Image (tube, rainbow, N blue to C red; front, side, top):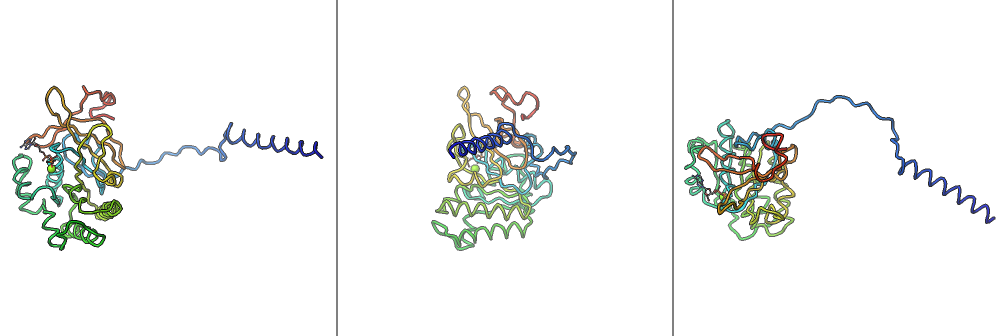
Length: 295
Ligand SMILES: Nc1ncnc2c1ncn2[C@@H]1O[C@H](COP(=O)(O)OP(=O)(O)OP(=O)(O)O)[C@@H](O)[C@H]1O
Ligand SMILES: [Mg+2]
């Protein structure tokens, strides 16, 4: 009896060993290999930003309908970049909207019109529509310190209505950080950004959400509440690097769903003709060797 048990155990052990050998040690495909068939490569349509150097980094532009977080330290050029994004769209005949929460629209326009690339006629003709968030809050009766679920839904609805009515295809919220300070729970911020992003994407609107951060270097968070970066389709980081007593502006694309892109740091210049991005080759972007704008 004992010998029989040992013999059965040995046979079972052998069977398990054979199964293990077949499937783990020497794995073989269960199905015979399918010959590779040539298929046409699908690429998403792009929203061409028109910003010098950025479209090359993004291999043609931002995938249409994306929500991109432009996270940057103070004075890093967030508003200028976002405004140029709208100007380039307006020049192509697109309707654009800018929701300003950090500075009054009058001040914003006074500052930005000093750049030669900006033309006030775009505002006068309704191609670039600038909205003060404060005014929007008062229209909606949301002049309060914090927003609940109903308030958040009312805000989403009003932004989506504006986008729908004007036919906006490029939208900027400057900044989403200031806006989200009014939304007290992390879950509500998540719902707000997710729902807004989804509705704007459905309308074919490409959105830049400006996020204020205190550090853009290692271990930095790309948002104040920690949820914006997870919800966003793309993250563009802007910050300063000190070199020999000078603060140099830089930009880096951290993620962009739906496209390959360079992740190298690029220097930024705010010129009268617009934002210019230059690869920081000297700064160790070794991946840039084979292409003008990096891998
Ligand atoms: N006409 C101009 N030409 C070139 N650079 C300018 C001009 N006007 C302002 N600047 C630079 O741009 C900076 C402000 O850029 P911008 O407002 O886009 O930055 P930001 O990241 O939005 O700043 P904030 O954190 O205050 O919102 C100024 O600090 C200044 O260095
Ligand atoms: Mg700004």
